[in-house]
Length: 282
Image (cartoon, rainbow, N blue to C red; front, side, top):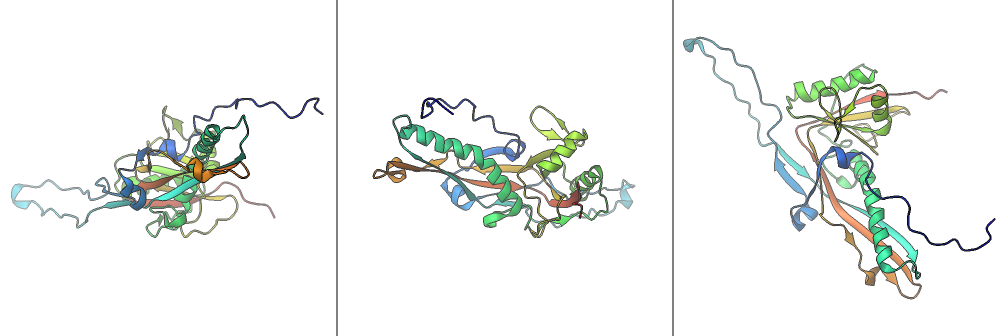
């Protein structure tokens, strides 16, 4: 029981930053959309780091084989944008001026946007593309392996050997898999990103870990996805609804809205494999 009511207003004691480690730290960027066109229509670029290599035997001059060139076209990467938004509702009081309410609206967006981007990117919500699940280009790594080391090895073998991808691949996974990798000392932090012994970047987060066709796997089973370099694009500054649109002067209620556009791209290929960390007992 308290002797004096109401409680006294104080400044928030905990800092808002830095954000926890996740997609926004593991990926390249976030890079600014180059224009309003990019914010509304997305981005596209050509990647040249995937496949097309072969060995060639050295013979005498008269016996040289004819070089066979691959017939690959442009490897075009396209990122379809989506919007991340949040809102903050309060009744303005003397201690809670509009400027403070706007600050809290922005603070809320900065807090939640990484989790939302990970969920949208991993599940393909709003037809965001490229995505991990619900992506017709996903290649399932067929393996009977259940050990996490073997599953990661199969995914890396697919990226580096099958697709001949030279730069570090990206492994996208939910926290459950990430924490298991860390607990078994299978990944290390290089000061900026978590990596496997092969150098693949590990991106943990609020990934839905769905099956490639979008179905929910059995409890304790999670799908890990391997891609080429992953890039996050977003509008440089969030949009905050102006006071005229956010404030109901009759009730003095402020309904703040903050949002910004995002797109996530990756190059080369996308592979997927399941790993079962536990099973439910009947």
